[in-house]
Structure formats: structure tokens, C-alpha cells
Image (cartoon, rainbow, N blue to C red; front, side):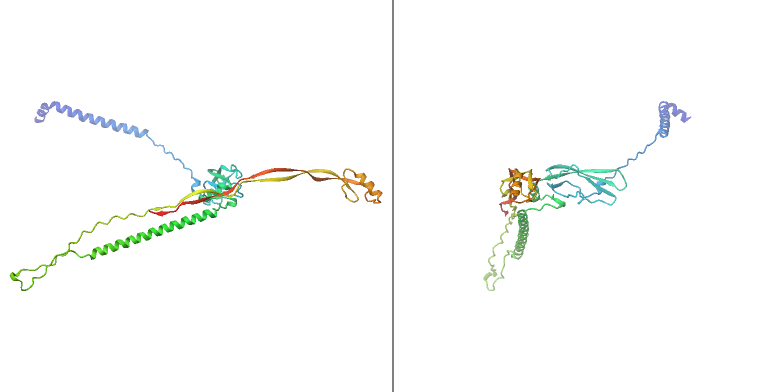
Length: 334
């Protein structure tokens, strides 16, 4: 009875609570049913992508190259190395070593026993002998015939040796100065520790003084505060200054060349004495017979090479020289 009475008094609230409970159950049912249908229809497709192996990752030494003009027997694979399963070949059809310029060199890598190949392109820069020497003196690697490397000039070797000596001297001087600073700093600390503290000394009263007064000695001078040391400036080294200059070893000159011009000419030769009787063969034979020389009884024709003139022309020779690093200002400490 009490429950019915309470429900009548709270009829509106009871209906709302019942509706909320029913609605919650319905939503839950719909959610479960929807999830079941999605689970039945959903599926995942797995796609595997095969990554190709980079064959050139195991190949060492492939790079752009400088080659001197007209170099012979260049082996493009001499500095190339790879593991045993990878074969490397080269295609140099586009490289012309007889003419300065930039050319494309192609390296081809394959796995032994397989046909698929990968390529890698580099640049071959062909330079004339003058430019090759200049680049070599500046530190570049220039290939000449049979993969030899272009040597630097003796002047450049001397400059490099001087630079090395200067650097060693600079390092040595810096180490010595650092050691001197440490010694000076140690001496200053030692002097500071030994300096006495300024204190007043009080003497005992002398016997026999009237009134028992005491006699004090004059206090010593008070210690002066130590001045803070000024920070020392670190020495700064200025490198030597060089300037590149072209030095002429031999001036340009013109050479005059004379070349003979030859032509095949028909000659009449005596059968007996072998004399050249071109122009009057029978006159020679008649004269020989009149003199009783019956050996010169006939002649034959021969084609012989004969100089008919001279061709003169001029050949120009460019100047010969080299680049030098000339010292403009020596290195110094500041």
C-alpha cells in the first residue's frame, strides 16, 4: 500500500525513469546489432611491396673524374670495388679524351646470374695539360695515361713544405706561450700565499714604569689590497698571404717549316752504263758507238721520285709556363 501511494505521488517521475531505462536498452540492442553486421562485412586486404636492392650501395670508388687530354689506357674500373655477388662494368662510348669538355660515363651493376641491371652516371672532365697542371697544383687529382696521377710542380711542392713548416712553428709557439703563462700564474699564486698578514704587535709593559702604564709598539703598515690582474690578450696568428701568378718559362714563337714537294717523273736510262739520258737517248747511244763502246746499245724507261719545288708554312707555338703561389705577406702574431 505504501508503494502504490508513493508511485501515485511520484507518478510523473516514475514514468520518466521507466522511459529512460527502455530507451537505453533499445540503443544498446541497436549498437550490438550494427556491430555484428559490420563485423560480418568488414575485411582487411594485406598488400606486400617488394623493395629493390640498391646494388651500388655495395660498390665503392665511383665518383666524378678529371682526366688530362690525350691520356692513354685509362682503366675506369681500377679504383672500383664491390662484393663477389655484384659485377660492375662500364660504358665509356660518350667519353672523348682527345678533346677538352665534360662527358658522361656510365657504370652498370648486375647480380651474377641475373639479367636485371642498374646504372649510375658520373662526369668525366677532360682538360688540357696547362689546366691539368693548374688543378693538380691546387690539390685536385688528375688522371694521366695508365691511371697515373698528375704530379705537382717543384715550385708548388716547395710552397707546401713552407706552409707546413709555418703551421708547425705556429703550433710550437702557441704551446710555448701557453706553458709560459702557466708558469707565471704559478709564481703569482706562490707569492700571494707567502705574503704576511698585517697585524699589530703589542709589547709587554716594561717593568718600573710609574702608574703601571703599558708601552705599545707602533703598528706595522696595513696590507694593501691586491689589484685584480688584467686579463691577458691571447695572441692571434695571421696566416701568410699568397697570390697566384703566371710565370712564363718560354715565350710564344713562330716556326717556319719548309717541306719539299716530290713528283714521279719518267726517266730514260742507258742499258749499258746506267746513265740518265732523258731528253736525248739516241744521241748518247750514237756517241757511244762512235767511240767504240758497244755496251750502250739501248735504253729503258724508269719512274723516279723527283723534287719539283718547296712548300713553306708557319707553325705557331703558344707560350709555356706555370702558376706559382707568390708570398705577398708573411704570417705574423698579433
